[in-house]
Image (cartoon, rainbow, N blue to C red; front, side, top):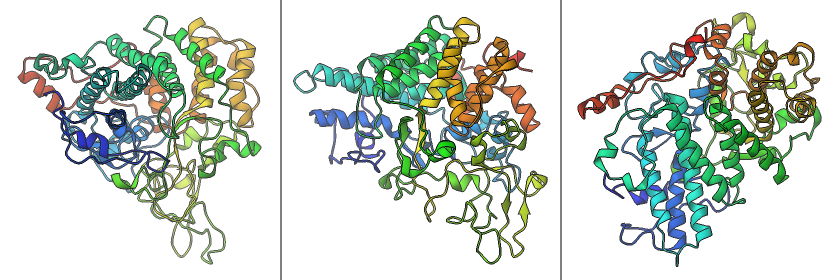
Length: 546
């Protein structure tokens, strides 16, 4: 790849959270490396191209292949990390076949056949390593901006933001494929030897690359930004999460995770959303409560969004969770509305909640109320579908966490990326892992017990805090209930090394592999230039997850 070979127009005209103020794209006409970027606003627009994989449209194209964005349900984090986890049953009723069924089974046996482009049946993200090279080129350009155009502070702000986005893309690729080859040094962009070095780095090397990007972002990003644009506090969240994931094999990472909690707490900006009492958990996700006190970062969506780039971000999740034959009303007289009255049936029930996972909630846990355990079929008899017909007429229980609030195809509900509840749970876990012991009562009350109280539950007690192992089991359960379908479950299960066992319990199927296989096209390309790109990867300890 030659430096700046990619389309500058693509990088700055596809965007970006347009439902919120100041996220409108700018079109500059004919752009070349000789006349762009030249002003501070040019450099900022150049930076904004790094957001493209993180907006929410059907696809984007930065590297010559259509790619799913990271948050679109069709191929983003919900499908990669939640549908493949212990949350739901395989999508076996009315499924679209191929990868839709296989990934919901945790079946990665054929993912090596996925191409460079991403589509509904076979969501392939490996080509995003080329996006990382692009981000690296952008970072180099920002670093070399003349001082008379970008002040030192502004340049560091922009570089920090770009490095957060690059680190986040590497983070997701790591958790999809294991370590993947990336270029993070701007001096190596366009270097054929570096670009042909298609071999996996070690887990420690990949973890360090991600850590370095997040840590730089924490130290250099702006503390405030227009709504929807990333901030230093979101970088702190990302670094905290990454260090928790990798702390078992990287020295000092648990300490850094705890440090990020302390910094977030010291900001005084966040608290659990409690308005409405026991309904607060469900209410926080509604469009009327966007960017409430609990939200560190969310992907803002718009009622006008339809999945195309000009219309801004959209949220089609309700179409993926509601059975296609769900009725708007319980009765034939249309007097008793269902939760789907404004939409009716969805496209099909791609994502669901397994009844056995539903049974892991404690009695009285109000978070369980966002799961619908029955529905009425849209026929003359309004046939009731309940647990007894799961696996026969529908795939599993219905996720109503992101409710249908307006009478149109796509909902304007924001997509949560970072919540204070997650930070509290991560802090309790990091403290336990660092000390290999149950945290003190004060820490428990400040974190997991506070989250449980908002859910209407008593503090953890008895055998759940009697030992480290019992506490960690309770922690994993708590995270599963609090963060239902927020794009992190498989990552959590792998961190606890229970991915295979938990899936076997709820799906009655064990995943075939820990991660997706790197596609054949990339392995063959590496072979052609004399490199060995290992197709399969699993973390140390995977064989013990039995």
